[in-house]
Amino acid sequence: MLTNYKPIFCSQDSITLNEVIETATADFEFDAVCLGEPVVFVNKSTTGGISQLNHWWDFDEDGVNDDSNENPTKLYAQAGNHNVRLIVQKAPRLQNRKIF
Image (tube, rainbow, N blue to C red; front, side, top):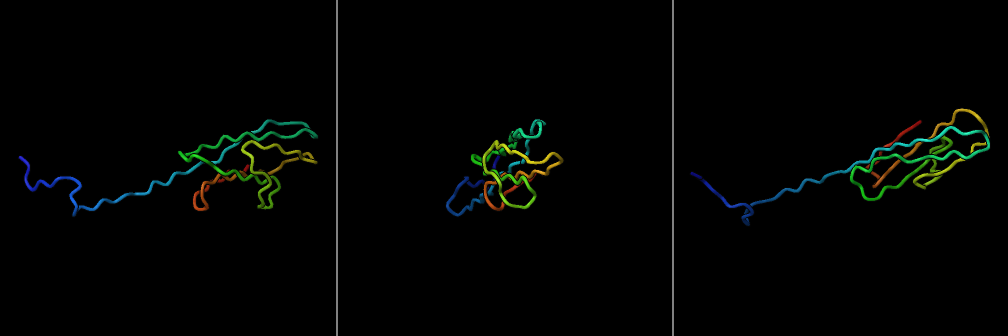
């Protein structure tokens, strides 16, 4: 037996909607190459349900976006270890970074 039964969605009821914040995870891979050949970076980021991601690649550690393609190439003039940063972002408050 139901007591104090009240139908759902009465006009005096309030409904609270919680915003679901989707997040993406930055990830990429590349193959080793010889000096003078371009490095092909392959974006492996997960979208977290976000329909469109922006990609910012920083190839020279200056904090400036060097490429916004999903899978860019980069030709390095000198051999050695090079740090690469990928930021995937939907909105300024939703971002994830991977530094290699």
